[in-house]
Amino acid sequence: MQEPQFWEDNAAAQKVIEECNALKEWTIPYQNLKKKFDDVTEFLSEVDPDQDRDFFAQLLAELNCIDASLSELEVRKMLSGELDGKNCFLSINSGAGGTEACDWALMLSRMYQRFAEKRGWRIEVLDFVEGDVAGIKSITLKLSGPFAYGYCKSERGVHRLVRISPFDSNAKRHTSFASVDITPEIDDTIHIEIRPEQLRVDTYRASGAGGQHVNKTDSAVRMTHLPTGIIVSCQAERSQIQNRETCLKMLRAKLYEKELLERESKLQEIAGEKKEIAWGSQIRNYVFQPYTLVKDTRTKYEVGNIHAVMDGDLEGFITAYLKEFG
Image 1 (cartoon, rainbow, N blue to C red):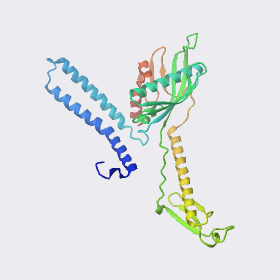
Image 2 (image 1 turned 30 degrees about the vertical axis):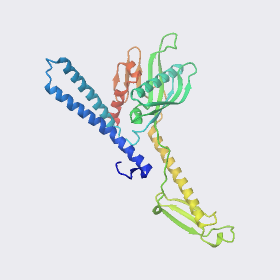
Image 3 (image 1 turned 180 degrees about the vertical axis):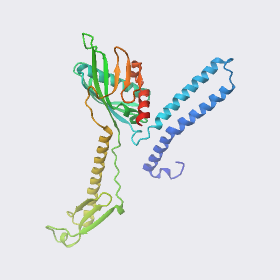
Image 4 (image 1 turned 135 degrees about the vertical axis):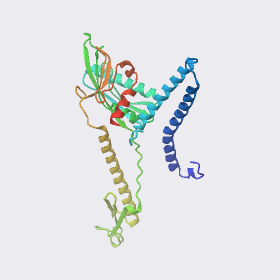
């Protein structure tokens, strides 16, 4: 980046800057933590805990903060997948449970927005369908921030709520369901590069009705893209140069279409198996009554403070998922 000619190719420069920023996401936090740890341990070696208890307690508290930050870096180390660093789209759909399920979908939406706010992510509401009585039938959020998809991918699945319904005059316990889907944001800009050595170009005499020139020269062009085997041909134009340009346009279009289809196939693989939004398919249970408990059915990680979870405290569930499934 210090080279004088760095900005001569703006696109290449931007790519290098992005790579540099990605590296800084690792190096700067590590260097800061190491400096803090060195400073605290140096003070600890000199302080007398019996004579200066307050200062000693402050140093221990700082060590706990360093440990928590180190755990955060360890979680990010698990986010090494190709798409983990991307922004993501988070969609919530109410399932079995009627009005109660719509209210549950709204509660989940609030939970994830609180989680994103704590991480400093940008939140955009892209789609929103209100419930007939209360809550929402569905909502789609775009979460923009470092490793948004990597952190949120653990939330994909059916979430089950058990509580005394505020919509039931008999105050009975109800079970409701809502599904959460996570999709990474993939850049739509596709640069199709066709190198000359990847092409085999054949010329031949155009067939069919022609004028004084078309059928007398090898003006038709057949172009084969060797890596993919895609073949295009054109004989409609009067000159070989025009037919060649038309072939290149068709080939680029076919390669673009091929890449789009491969992308859609990859997204389908990422989405995984679709399950019914009902009993038996949930990934996590949220119980408000007769006791309070949030338990993940995949990792068995559980938390008793359900109100903290509903306020966006999801780090424990995400860390447990990443440690087990990566």
